[in-house]
Length: 573
Image (cartoon, rainbow, N blue to C red; front, side):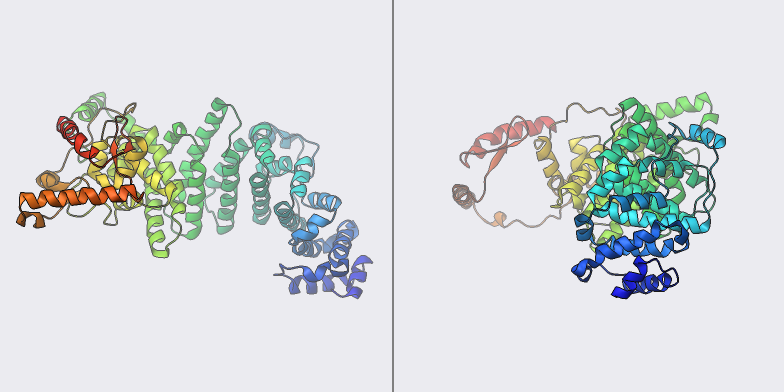
């Protein structure tokens, strides 16, 4: 900026200011490097000149342009750290109308409505709304760049003001609501104190859940509204990341929130557009913070299930207890979206999202970690409720029919999850193993049946059940879900449990050599393994009484334990 232009800004020459600011804003719209502004103290002088105009109410018609200039200047982190800007931040808070107010935020949205009816407030004009939105943009940059600015915002109780504006019955432009949420997200993401205050002191989760519910009631939700919902879900994720309220109080809020998220999943579950998918993504992220006991709200009892007679219910109970009834026999549905008299459409949305994510991950070679939130939610659902576990098992682990291919080969959900069991990515590997194991009711034999021992060995080693012992302390229903299909029974004898599929028989090269030659080759193998052990290249082990691998002192110890292992295996079979 030329020195003459700077002097005119400092002198507040209203006739020249629009042209000067328009030229500066257009030229520096994408500026990120401010080295040239640090010479001759240009950044600081321009900063003071612009705020001199913002502090002058007679020049309010120029405030939008000035704030656009401020937004560009707030990208310079170095200058923000080296200059004292507390007074300017207060000016921005005032322009954004989120400075400390005289009215205290009530405890509930209903109390806020009563307060508004007694003391109604004027709705801002379009010009005023533009100024508020531009000031919020500047504050977003400052909050992101400066920790001092974040603490100053908290001292000025801007959280109270934003939450009050969000929860008020007054309609605001979409841009204003969006940047309110953006600022709230940055504060809660970067300042732990903001999360605590928003959740405990302001009861913010209740206000935001109510606001989200109101958004979903609207008939048409445009792209701008979807962006607002995404930002709101991100704020709620931050707030629920470390709940500080008492367990009972937090559970009540979580139950209500889960019910609202269920309606959100049902509305945008078609994943027709990228925005719909983004909303569902943020909803799933939020569900990862909710305890499993509250996730039962994702499924509701079907409305027409109550109309069934007592006799029919007794028949259903008898069918559930019958040991001959397995996963292959689908339960009678009372409507198209029900499973065992529960509406499971939200679970269907989660599985549809998982399938799309898997397809996208393979097509674009994107990060595996993007799948971890939806897998986390599915694990919680399967652990928390019997009906949800039954439904997920039917969709992910249907009765086996074709066992000619390995479990990890194919494009079904089971195939994808089995491939993840051998990934180096620990989070995705462990979540996939946990989900499959829970769907198998933590039954080792059933896990081997669906995944193969080789794929599940990592999970078994981690849990100390490499010897295929029964997992203690599990709490699952005793009804059988594992009846085998006729196709599976016909091929069962030829299945290799390590691979999890039928292994084609091939001629062994040992068939053509004598017993003496076999013994000689075996001893050669023992000697080679012992050399590798002594060199520290491999470490042979055997399974101890705790089901965990223990290193051997000599390779021949395997031979000593062989008779006992064979006896144990016979007892199990």
